[in-house]
Length: 84
Figure: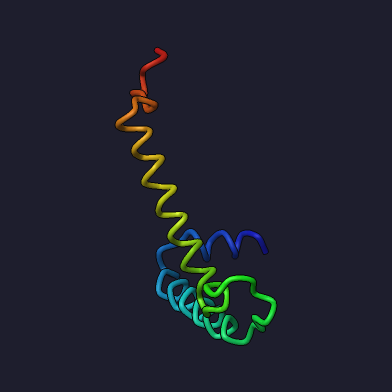
């Protein structure tokens, strides 16, 4: 069973099916977001459909840019053979 799952996600032959499955799940999540009741939202932006996804995506992108800045510009990143 696990071999079929690993083959499905690791093999290039299934790329088109994986992409379609991804878009289907993404569409279902967007549709489900419109069905959530928001009467207990404290702030205005929490009532907007898709706010959580947009906030999460923006936070992830910001985290990537900050970590790349710290690694490359602030000297936290070292060469592969630094300790050799």
